[in-house]
Image (tube, rainbow, N blue to C red; front, side, top):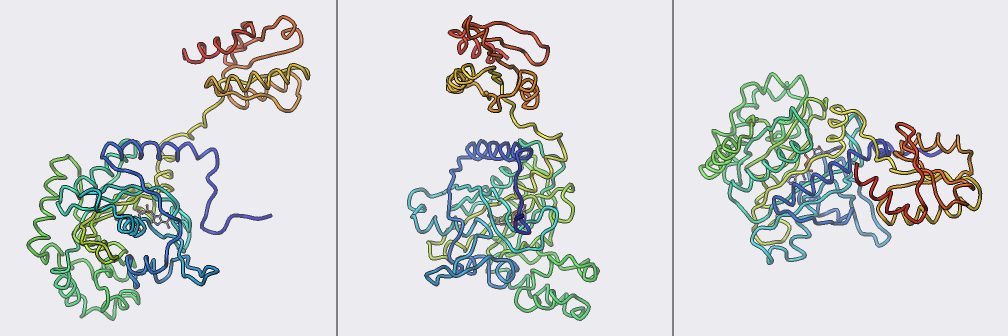
Length: 420
Ligand code: HAM
């Protein structure tokens, strides 16, 4: 007996309806915002992720599925979608086609994390990347798009948390002030915080360990250290969001775990998700395109976890039933079975979702099967019906039966089933 690898999961038919719905709504909403889909490979060169996400991040240090292929190349199963999109954007010269490129993606990502509810080693993200605009309108539009998408899915009680982490001008000031504030209590902070103190002090703000929390209560507000341009950008963004009626909380500790962010960072969180409460994370990354060899191109985007969206949807609703067939064909006798097989094919081509018995069961057993499929109608086709060139159509909910001539069957069923 084999079982799936730790941290992965099978998406079974009783859950797949949620996935289809999320994907369908995402395609619709993204298209309203003029986004186009881009599909990139599942694995990329390891260096792409090291250079973009950052060598000292948890993702690159501990969580990547990295391997050497038979040609001795170091490859990595993509842990996220932004770096591959930027790689493709540069490589395919998309920046030359339009001043602003709006791209979205859906697919599996891989991180070697400790599995728990809502955290997997293979998980799925749906994400958007808007490349080419430095204006805070682009940030506001991106956040509005996420909120719109979740509204459309009926996900309620979500909150938008937002922050600015500054740019290359003000980040050193922000970090220095934070270090000054924390330096006197460094020995009381956890090992991770100490390790981050010199090289990536902002990430200390992300620490969730209870022992460190008391020392964060009065941290200097990042906003007070932003340069004028970052402050103006942030103020405009907040103004646009308020005007769009989007509620948000400013969370000065929202720094995110990937190195490429500048200015805006945001997360959309749900209290239905337990410890892994972020359904969606994103922000601005104005230097990444250039860092990966492209022209200087400001950009902003987000990604949300499909598994986490499914967890919330499942909690909100009863199980989504997979679509039942409209019709089940129950033939009796070998000749009728063969004829039914051809009728089945004709009906499917006419757009009717139908199924037939492939087990040579009795009528009783076949009706039981039809009920198990939750089929609306059963078409009974025995020897006597064959001789008279008719079939009996039985409505399963009330047992009503009508005889339908075989040569009118397709038209009759298309009409009957479409009328509902
Ligand atoms: P991220 O915050 O690392 O950002 O991931 C985005 C979302 O993916 C999370 O909010 C969560 O819902 C989901 N997620 C992440 N890790 C897991 C996991 N192990 N299991 C299940 N779900 C998970 C990014 O990946 C950035 N690339 C987002 C972005 C796009 N920023 C700008 N553009």
